[in-house]
Image (cartoon, rainbow, N blue to C red; front, side):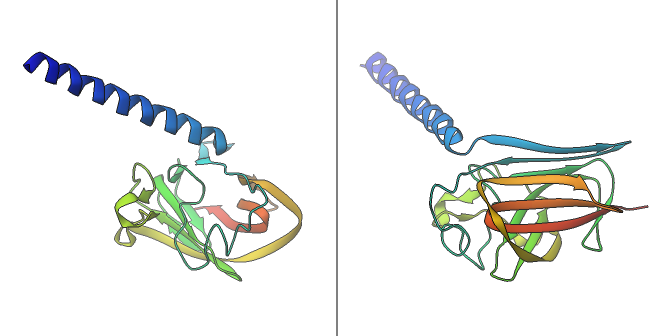
Length: 185
């Protein structure tokens, strides 16, 4: 009897693990992983995120509600890592690894760097709300929203150099947000 119970328990664990593995890989096919990287001298900035598609949906103010924390991508939290201290929107961010959250609004967004990187990015026990804990926020920058003629089907984060600074751009649908970055001296 003990052997049957042990084998049944093992079988249940294997089935659950297989289902979770399948669901994880299936979800990743809808919102694939991507990494945006900027390298210059000894500065390396890397942003790891998942790229959901628009698929005809209303994005900001719809799928991604205004005024609520968004994990800034899909599947898991977006991770921002820098090898040097930076000034972002005129505020200092020390070198290190952070989760990147946003609070989209109609006219402006809050871009939040948080010292905690949760495993999934959402709190399943809290109605699927973002798993950001504000007490771990290390930097919040408010940036204006721009509307573009071009429609971005897939959520995109890019980092590039402008004339005298760097810029991290978040774009999806016809919405674009640009975050100014300089290297702290």
